[in-house]
Length: 272
Image (tube, rainbow, N blue to C red; front, side, top):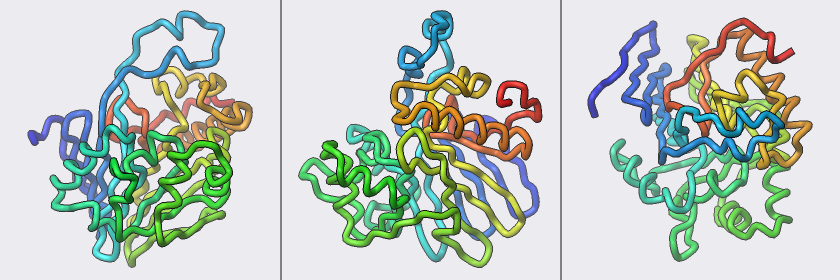
């Protein structure tokens, strides 16, 4: 794949941006990938706003991003995409010399079908047969009591499961760690994933904090129909965007115009 944008090196971190649908970053002893499984129009018609201009305007197309982390101690996949993108996922893994059986951990940010849909094959068998499921406990329990059989069956298909309830590392090596951060509202246990290395380089996967990036990054008070608790989702979005602006932390989400992480400015006018 042709290198389209840039390569920058800062100490132990090297960044590679390959077009808009693939990104790689070396973080100490780990390789971190942001991989898009499909591209499509952002769901502006699902935004909850009286502003008809926002609903009808044309915005940049969304990638549908997942993340992959390769470390000598583990190979972790963060979310799995839709059922119909499972073959794309397997192809993307193959490009990195991997099969689903090589994945040691599946980290699920939440149970919506575009995040758990790549777990089961057409025969409802888990393709990640050697992986341990890592998921927020409240999120798992919610889907176990839901009528959504796809989420229930997918999450319940793992023979090995580990649940987290606090913002403490769930996977780590000597130089790298993965930490879930609570971002409730979109779903009861919606979780962001913080990747951090020993050089204090950080990358935050915000999952479904934003669905229409060009609108919600400046208007976090605009919810979307998919938010289960809209008031809590708005509060979470405001708090996280404020933090991102104040820290200038690099971040990327599932529904983003690119697979390349970005930063926000220190202007917090719209997140007060």
